[in-house]
Image (cartoon, rainbow, N blue to C red; front, side):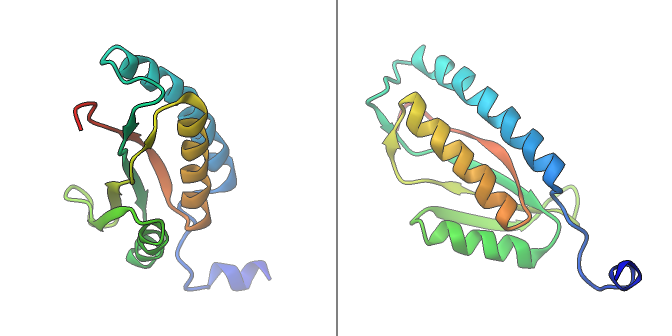
Length: 132
């Protein structure tokens, strides 16, 4: 079977399992730090905000599939090739508003990491504007 995989036309895996674990751990570590910074801008746990998200992958088919999954969650989504590297697809967008409490944002972050991995895309984090 190994030799057949070598000659396969399947695109190379963009996010191997080991990377997924590292990405998830990094994102789950950064989320409380980001929320702590938002608290300085009067973003209370009860305040609802939209979050901007960022993903990367190596084929337009994977980007399309992830974009569809995100659209099915009623998120605003855009995707296309990176301006600096045409071999990289970027998927960005905005969520619907939800409360900025630690548990909700951490759960959402974990979910985005898993959704990205399901579609062989790397979740590269999130941001927001506290003045929405």
